[in-house]
Amino acid sequence: MNQWLWRSLLSLAPLYLSLPAWAADPAAVEQLLTTNQCPGCDLSGADLAGANLFGANLVNANLTGANLSGANLGNATLIGQFNRG
Image 1 (tube, helix red, strand yellow):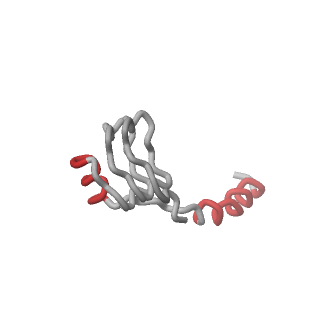
Image 2 (cartoon, rainbow, N blue to C red):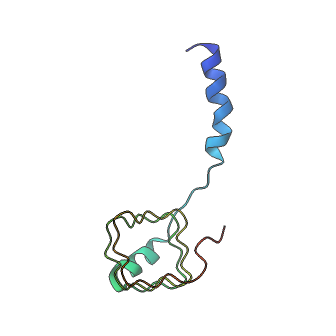
Image 3 (cartoon, rainbow, N blue to C red):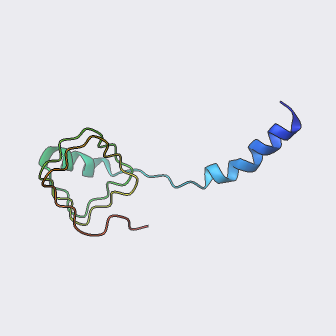
């Protein structure tokens, strides 16, 4: 690689390293998926794509960065503060 490319890559490294790392609490994800009840849970960064969350209680749950693509959120309770960051 030429010198310009190396400099470009190295200048972007601090930006990549400073990105937030979201990691959902695995116990909270399991609780939600088995009971549909997870008020106040930390679900930040959780992969809930395609999950059946019909009627789920997500009051005050942190859903920052969660993947809810294709999730069924019909009649789910989504009241409260979702992004605490």
